[in-house]
Image (tube, rainbow, N blue to C red; front, side, top):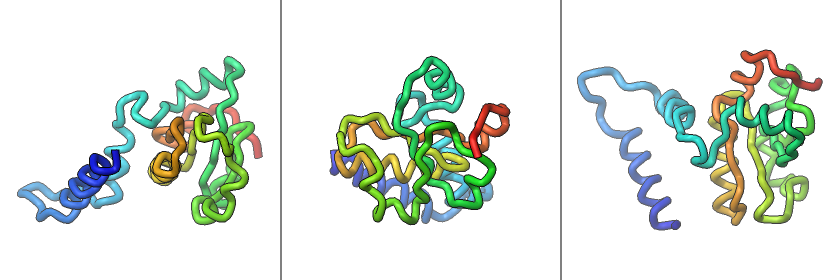
Amino acid sequence: MYKRLSIVALLAVALIVAPAAAAPSPTPGDAALQFITNLPDGFRSIAPAALKTRLDAGEKPFLLDVREPNETAAGVIAGAVVIPIRSLAANMGKIPTVKEAEIIAICQSGLRSSYVAMALVMNGYTNARTMSLGMREWYAQNWPVVK
């Protein structure tokens, strides 16, 4: 598992630092966001619409909002626990200790939350995922939030 992850990480780094071809390449951040946005369903991600359907059906996965206070001021999904990504390591006691717990990380676009999901998996969590497209999509659909 770690060997495969290391190979994938090396390939990702190689692609980011490789010389550009004839066409201009996107910035590394844009490329990463595009990659994460297009992850297939079930690949450590959940689409906002699928999460909304599950929440409406009464399911209660652990929602971990890793945005900063200036971002969460616009509202969070009901029941989400807000722990800004920069303080996550110091607040691990606020997330489930059961490694099989379903944890859905949420940020504004899906980028930071994918980092968090990956870090959780690397720390033994077996059911950590990111909400692809993030709160940007949730807000665009005008779905409910709490402030």
